[in-house]
Length: 293
Length: 277
Image 1: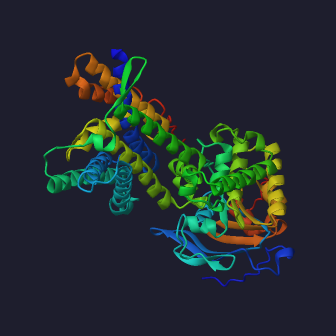
Image 2 (image 1 turned 90 degrees about the vertical axis):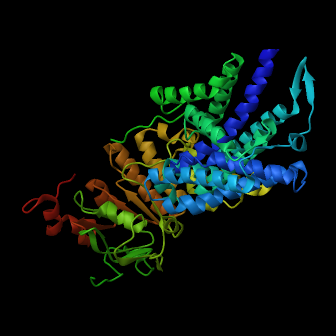
C-alpha cells in the first residue's frame, strides 16, 4: 500500500520533471543551447497562475490557458531579443546569455513580487478530493497531474511526428543547412520549438504549483536544474528520452526519501548527472555522435 | 566583368527560343584576399542537362554554394527564371526554384525515407498548427495529398518499398537516390547535383544516368551537375562548362570539350590527352 502511494508520488513529480525536461531537450536539439532560463519561465508561470486565480479571479480553465499562453509568449520574447541576435555567435555566448536571462528573471521577480514565498491556492485550480481505487486513495491533484502531463506529451508527440512543422523541426535539428535548402524557414522553426517547450513549461508550472503550493522567485532554479539532469539522463535532444529521464529522476528522489534520507535527494540527483556524464554522456536514448571522417 | 551573351552555344536547340531558366552574369566571390570564383557566366535552358567539370579545388562546389545562396556573391548577378536573386537567402532561393544534393550525402538520417521526402514537400502543404492540433479535415487532406505525392515520387525511382526505413539505414546508392528525390520534392526548376556518381560502381552509375535522363524527361526541368566521372558527363550532358582556378576556361558540347587543348592542359598539364576518368 505504501509502495503504491510512493509510486503515485513519483509519477506526479516525474510528470512535471518530464514536461520541463522536454523544453530543455527540444531547444538543445535544435540550436544546441542549454536554455537555463527555462526554469525561470516556469517561475513566471507560477506567478501568472497565482494572480489569474486570486487577484483576477478567473475560472480555473481560463487561468490555465492564460498561464500557458503567458509562458509561451515570454519564451518567444526571450528567444527573439536574447538568442536570435546570437544565432552565429559561439555556443558559449548563448549559454552565458541564458544564465544571464535566468538571473534577470529571478531578480525582476524579487523586485516585483518580493522574495517572500506566497502560498498557491491549489483548490482554486484543482478541487480537493480523492477517489478510492482498490483500497488505495488517489488524490485529484496527482491524478490530474499525471493525466494532464501524459495528454500534453501525447499532443507533443503527435505534433512532432505527424505534422509538417514537427518534421521540419526534426530536419532542422539534424542539419540546419540542408533544411534551409528544402525551403524551410529555420527562424520560424526555432521560434516554434521555443514556443512548444514553453507551452509544456506552462502546463508544468500549473501542475507544480498545484502539487507543491509555494511560489517564490527562486522556484524555477532547482526544478529547472533537476529537469536538466533528467534531460541529460534521457539523452539531451531526444524527446522520448526527456520523458523517460523525468520519471526516472523522480523515482530516484522518491526512493531516496522513502529510505529516510530526504536531505540527500538533491545530492543523489547530481550524482546521477556526474555518473551519466562519465559513463554515457549521450544518455539513455541519445544519438551516439559519429565523427565525420 | 566579361561580356555576356545569354544565347551561349551550350543551350540545346529545343530551348533556344526560350528564356534561360538560370543565368549567371559575372558571378564572383572572394574569401579574404583570395578570389575563389571570378567572372562566372552561364545560361542554362529550361530542360537542359549541363555539366560543370574541373580539377579538384577549381571552385565547382563554391559555385553551387553561390547559386543556392549559402554564400553571397562578392560580384555579379544570378537570375532564376529572369528574377534577380540578389536579396534572396537559401530558403528563398529554394522557393524560387533551385534544389540541390550534396557531395557528402546530407540526408535527415534519423527520419524515415518518406519523412525525408515530406520535408521536401514542406511548402506544398497548407494547413496551420491549430488545424493540426484539432485534427480538422484540412489537416488530414493536406497530409494525405502530400503523402501520396511523396510515394509517387519515390515510386518513380523504385524506392516505395523503403518508405518506412530510416534514411540512415539505406545502402549508399539508395541514399544518393533519396537525396535526389528529396530535392525534386521541393518542385525545382533547376536541380543541382553535386557529384552524384561519387562512390558509385559502374552499374550504379549507369542507373544514375538513366535516372537523370528520366528526371529531365518526366519533370521537364534543367539539371546542372558537378561530376568527375567523364563517362557520365560525356554521355548525358548536352553542354559542359569547365572551371579551373575559379574561372571558366571552356564551354561547349561534350565533343568540343574533349578536344579543347585548354581543358586537356588543365587536367593533365601540357602535352597529354584527356583521361577517361
